[in-house]
Image (tube, rainbow, N blue to C red; front, top):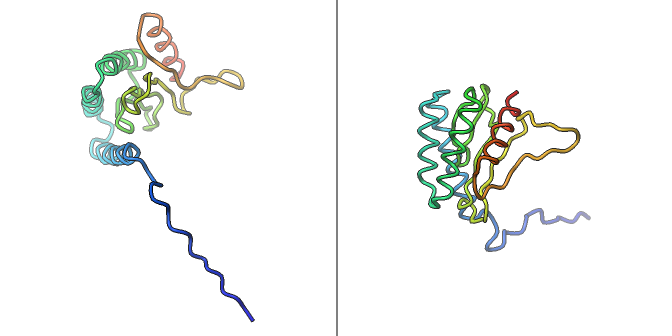
Length: 155
């Protein structure tokens, strides 16, 4: 005599799933991928997308830091292609892989913005190194550190 087991999974409980912010980020990413496919590797289109993303930031500090990060990265690594990545400014190598990015504090309602690097950035230092940095203000000191990190990342 065989018994039949129920293989149905229980229904998801109410409230589980993606948050509104996560859904918005996914939609933004789909739009970015479509725009990238249309634009190819067009620096002008990438610049427009980044500046639009920066100008759309609600917090004036985020906008100010985002604009300055954009200036720093494009000067330190002019070979990186500007683009948006999940709605935020990012800079990719010739293969389209994101090397570094800026994330506004207001994006996730946190107390600091983030400047970070992806795995293709060449920042390796022994067995452990930082890949993301909190930013609440940019001074000449932080700007110099960012320039050095970006140059190392693309070396």
